[in-house]
Length: 391
Ligand SMILES: Cc1ncc(COP(=O)(O)O)c(C=O)c1O
Image (cartoon, rainbow, N blue to C red; front, top):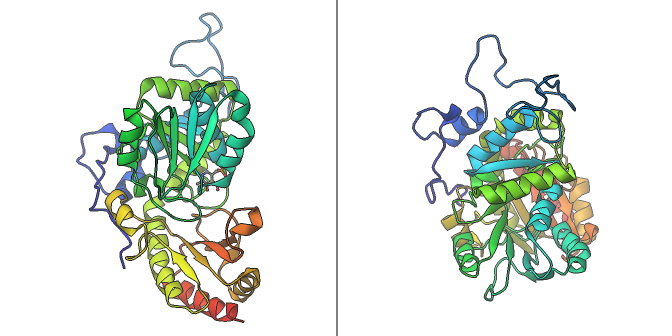
């Protein structure tokens, strides 16, 4: 049973506070990410700035480097962008939700005549958005399964990957696919929602964009929606920033502050979620109520080898299949700790029967997101619920 791959691809850690510290561990990095250097009398994380217009110099008017209007200038989300950018290894542009971030990448980079390739088994709303809005703009939409095989990328302007895919948890080789897409002059974006930047750094693997819903594990408390796009290329960053300024999909100052505060515990939360997923996936694999289980951190899982090469740690999301809807109903009714809820990556363990949202998935398929409860309590609760699921 392996739960963490940190030695496999050790990511270079930027220095906290931009100083000359040597690379630090994940816990240190998330606690200090985006936190300003100490100033006597100031809080560690500056309080949220609530401003639509800011005072202008009445004579000089707008000045470079001086905040003028909240849709483009806000110190609270700039600090959050600095924090996420440090962790992803690029520059960050935050958005009001993951979908606002993903649609920004699609709409700001694609033009009529372009082709985009999306995961056929990834987050369903990305595909739904593309199907509804891109063909009418003259953009061809193709889908491919995350596990491949991938044909050549001739004529492909943008390849969007989601790895591990949601909810199937397949993994693809980002470095290999990015090299192949770049050879055909395509751009590559990776939806990094499920792993978070502590689990995987798409920009290091050659992607042009790391895009994510920070609604999930990154913020992890099931109390906000947030998204972001990270990139290294200044032109691509300018395109995304301009898109946000024009369309206005910015997060509120309070959400940005709350997200930054939540980020400090990311290492601790992920460690417990991953430990819980390791224990729960073992239990699931040996239980007669379970037809199949997927978790890329489990030796023998079809995604294990690829995950071990590419990921620094495995997220706490496990996908398993019970006999049918009735079995899932019995499972949820019998559990005392598992909340029925969509979304994932939060403090509380949740289970989501994906067919109820229209996913092309078996009726009994459950996306199970391990929270930070004590492992022994969670395993005992899930065992009881699985016994009940047998009927
Ligand atoms: C992989 C993935 N990407 C993007 C999104 C969209 O994020 P949001 O709900 O923050 O708009 C989700 C939401 O579940 C997701 O699971």
